[in-house]
Image (tube, rainbow, N blue to C red; front, top):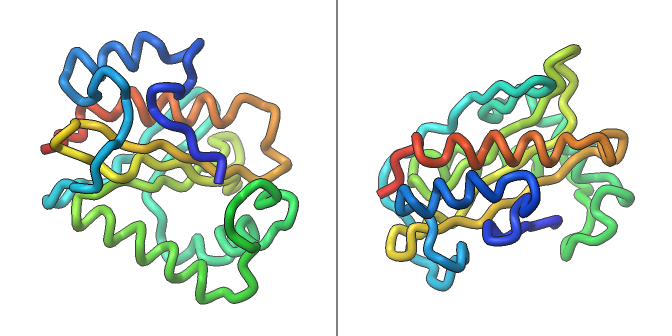
Length: 168
């Protein structure tokens, strides 16, 4: 997975956001997740809008799209997991998204192009750690969406929304 630690997240584009998160007490000075303790409260997954994207909670209607994304050899070329071979894996992915929301342990958001509503991938903040007030960021985009700045735009919006999510 193209998983990005928050301390390195969008260093050029979001340095101000990372500083704001630290000022709000949401990141330690390293922006890392040294422990595994997670929040134990419901944390509603936000719906976010950017100039070109809609980031929203996953629904069952995303099953085919997420399965197609994670079945791609090209998309998962550098991941530590094999491409999916069963649709049930997508169903489990969506169930885990809802479980993370209920537990308050993270948020995974589907990413759509705002212009046409096409699913292009997902991004997440996971492993909330209230002891260190930190999280891990990740994203996965369809190869047709690579190189267009969508990951920067989506993760920037997610970083900006973080302080309003009221982590414990």
